[in-house]
Image 1 (tube, rainbow, N blue to C red):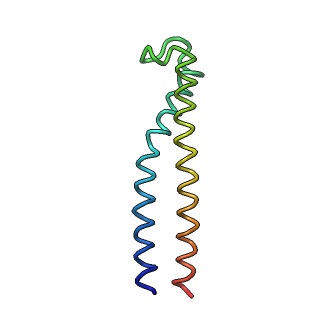
Image 2: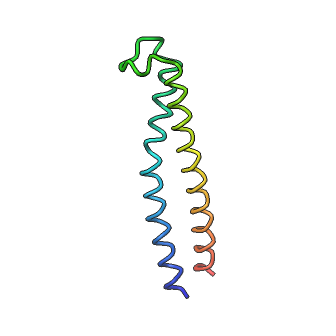
Length: 89
């Protein structure tokens, strides 16, 4: 029983790392979108960010990825906490 729980904990740790790597572009997109909306003022380092519509699209896509990452990480951490409690008792 304990080996199975430890194996599942290792799988959760790997899944957390993969999820965070996949979620990193989402945060980058959110940052670029916010830069384009609030800081660029039509003089962005890339012409794509000068259009407010493009920036809102980037924010929406990045936000969706960040939301998915948050839900996935929260679920994994809850399961990890349950397994740690089982192993410690």
